[in-house]
Length: 231
Image 1 (cartoon, one colour):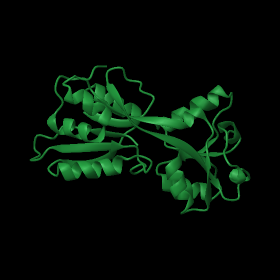
Image 2 (cartoon, helix red, strand yellow):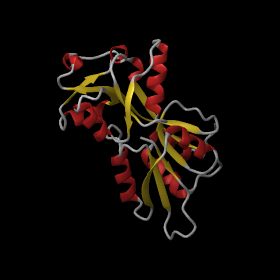
Image 3 (cartoon, rainbow, N blue to C red):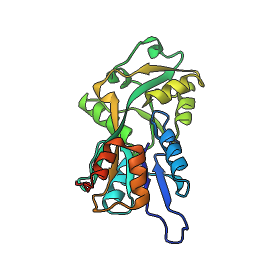
Image 4 (cartoon, rainbow, N blue to C red):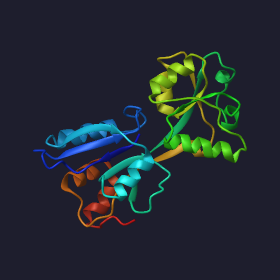
């Protein structure tokens, strides 16, 4: 899940935030939905909307001053932004219920490299991660399809068009809705960190500062001590 907040348009009567996401809907492995609800209740005058961006795009937009805040999964590739830990999550695997791997208690990534993969859209951080891991094992990814939306991925896996690597908590939810099986991915890199990022500046816009302080305890201490983020 990728998110960023833009400065309010001048024509807007109330502070206005735009949250850019990765196209999967709100990722259910994140605490972000409850954070957004808490923030909206505390600051009802700040309007929020959701749109799509990739991790790399968000980092660039923050660095160039086109966006104020981002929440995304690493790697952090932009040196001109300041990041704090937001939340960790794990990746898991979904396979058709009748698949040969469905009886496994856990799988290694190498177990998947001879399988057709139903992947997320090009440019997504997880897609880059899987490509790099496959390359380190000396094999290419067999991407059969790349789509937007976890429900769409689950339907294609259910139809026996491949297996997929997606967030574990999302996979566990989808296992109850589709004829698929969730299997833990037994790799150290399967645990991923979501970070919150801002562009270093002397004073954050008030609405942005309130958002950051509400959702990110790690950033709150820095901001309240009047330490400007540094890259």
